[in-house]
Length: 300
Image (cartoon, rainbow, N blue to C red; front, side, top):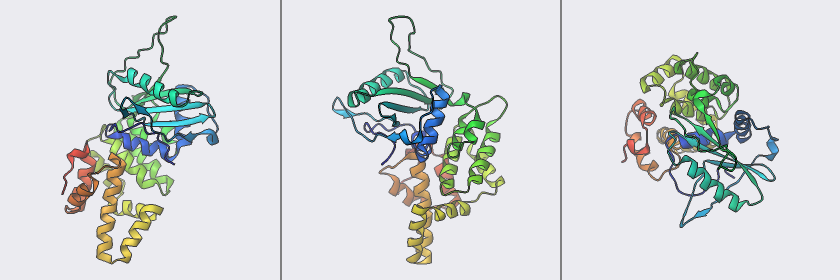
């Protein structure tokens, strides 16, 4: 059961699928970090349960980035905002109405992760009798990278921080090292997430240079995927149908996994993979990293 609650078909910014993947891989750890950051007390991991549901809204639906139970009568909603729009507060109010209409006996905590340096206008008015929504704003640039680097699964988020004493390249190196040291089956997903999130802070040639310096190769990425249960099974099945066919299938599976991690499931993925598979391997991988939106990629 997926931990994301779906309210409809809004296509979020490029980083949404990446952040969803990072947060949902260890939902308990992600929720614990959010609650700690906004100053709320921790909750038992057993109390954290996803809420998969669709809610109608005036002939359409709405989609939240993450919604989960924190207890029998307490919900947490998390939204990811690459560049906060002027309608942020009205949208949060709209979400609150939809969620609490569906779960009328539950209280709701709302938190927004701001991924850029864009200013956020807080619409809350704390004067007596005035309106106050009470949503918590988490500016990723202001967060402590060491806390994220010490939290398995959340290391990719460290590249979004901007402490005065560290530059983005140093944080990238530390996050890369922390992920590699885990040596688990999700390592390749975390590395792809780190590389994708880094595109907003580092130029593509710098990311490629850091990969080369770390001695992390595409062969290692494929090996990580081969060792993972789902992608590994697909690769082994491909090998059974012939060594040459297996290599082609393996390469396409790497591209599918990278594209789905960065942009989410999309109807254009098969055509894009077919187009990229005809290119040299390094050129295809570079094109995925450099693309800001799925429309930036070629289709067959």
